Image (cartoon, rainbow, N blue to C red; front, side):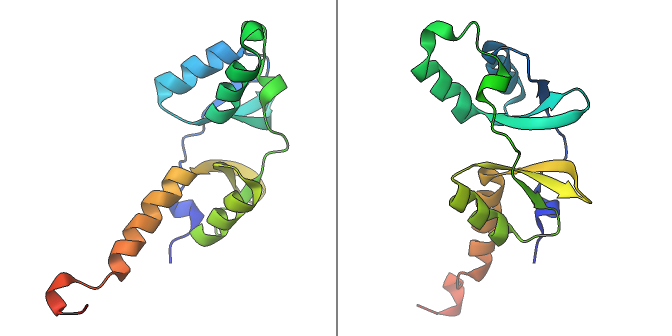
Length: 138
C-alpha cells in the first residue's frame, strides 16, 4: 500500500506572512498551485489556500489592497506523517473540511498533499480493483 510520502509534493512553495493577498493570488496562479505555506522568519506559521483568497475577495472586496496573508492564513498547520496511509489523509481532510495537509518527517515539514493528489491515487487504485471486461464477470 502507498504512503503519503509517495504521493506528496516535495517542492515546498511558501510566502511571507506580510505579503498582500493580491500578490499571493498572483503567485498561486503563476505556479498553478492551490496553497502556499506561510513563513515567519525561519519557521512555517500557517497555510493560505485558494479558498482563503476567494473568500477574502467575496467578503472584503474593498480591502483587497490592504489584506495580508497573516490575516487569512490557517494556523496552526494541520500535518500528517509521511508514513501514514492515503486513507488516513483522506479521512483527516474530510473531518477537518480542508483540502491540503502539510506532510512531516521527524516533525519537520517536508511536503504537501492535496485532495487532488488523493483523488488521483484513489482513481488508480479503483481501476485496479474493478473486474476486467474480458474475464466475463458481471
